Structures are given as C-alpha cells and as structure tokens.
Image (cartoon, rainbow, N blue to C red; front, side, top):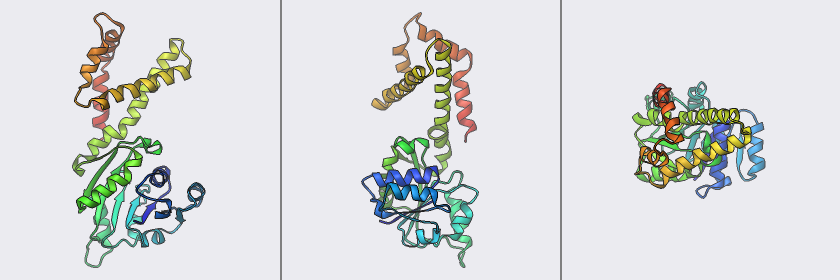
Length: 265
C-alpha cells in the first residue's frame, strides 16, 4: 500500500512520522510532498527510506492512499492539480473542507463533471497527534468496510480513532479538537492560581497536568461512570472541594464551557 502525504506542515509531518513508526506502513511505503524542502529533508533524515518530493503530481501518481494535509486556502488548487483516479483513496485533514466540497472541486476538472470513483475520508486529528495521543475523528463516503478498517487501523498510531457520520463531525471536533485549547486554558488558569498561592510555576504545572490526566483516566477506565459520580466521591460535606465547585458555579464555569463548545461549531 503506497501512501502519499500532501503537505509537510505540523499535521502532515506528524502524520508521516506516526505512520512510519506504526505497524501498518513502512517508511518505504510513504512519499511526502511539500513546496519547500526544509521540512522534507527533516523527514528524510529521520526516515531515510521515506520518499520526498516537491511535486504533488509525482507523489500522487502511484499512491493507493492520498492524505491531503495542506492549508484550507490552497486546498482547492492542490485538488485541481493532483492526478487522482478511480480506485484510489483520498483522506483529507483540511479544516472546514467537507467531502462534498472535495467531490465538487474534483468534478469541475472532469469533462463529464464526475469526481473519481474512490473512497473519500474526512479526518480530524488534534494537536496531540504529534505524541500519539490524539482523538482522531473519521467520516467517509463510498468506502467499503475493508477500506474503512484499513484507514482507522493506519491512523491508530496518532491515538484513538472514532468513526461517525460527517454531519456530526463539526460538533465532535468542537469537543475533541477545539476542546484541547479549552483544557489547556484551564491548566493555564490553575497554574496561575498555584503561583499566586506560593507554588513554583513548574511545580504547579506538573501537578495540574497530572490532575487532568488522572481525571481523564478515571473516565476512560470506566466509561459508564458519569463525571458527576466521581465529583461526588471527591467532595465531602463542608470540605474545600465543594467550596471551590460552588465558586465555579457562581462564576458560570459550566455555562462558559458549553457556550465555548457551541461557538466552535
């Protein structure tokens, strides 16, 4: 299975690295295309067997799977340039670009206004893909079960993968992708509070990060257990935790989180 990754920016390079480190693809199976050579050379140094090129046409020509990882403003031009054909698979990680957008663009360059007969995927990792801890979302069109399983298995080195209908993808991304920024905002605020209370910033950061990891792990360990049940276990009558929770409620913490996530769709 030959894989072409179009774009070697932060996400394209992260995907190339994680796939090369995974079990589903070898570096020799991967070719990465990018206009400038600096990031390509970095990948080549790290994975000598990986192919690199500045030509999208060359990258796509013999690929079974094409992963589009370019900036949204140039995605239409790149799609028009690539010689995609029937039987290939196309996976886009371009933000805001729907599968319908992709097929509409591709149909424009066909004399019969027909997009290539291939499996189309829309993939949304988050920033934690660089360390293999992403929650990666996948939607598809015209993909058979074998193709869908192949792609989800291929992307597993980025972190857990979840498939869902594309109409739910924006809402899911608000939680799984934009949500990373909201969690980091909480961490930043907690560290600031810790410093004000006399802790060193490094100490406060380590404590807060582990607190977030621990809270997430509790839910992952028993997904059927609602967060409210764990909160109840932590709080004791008249204790410090319930006082802090009440302050969060008075400040509209839950409402602010809900509004932020809804605003991200």
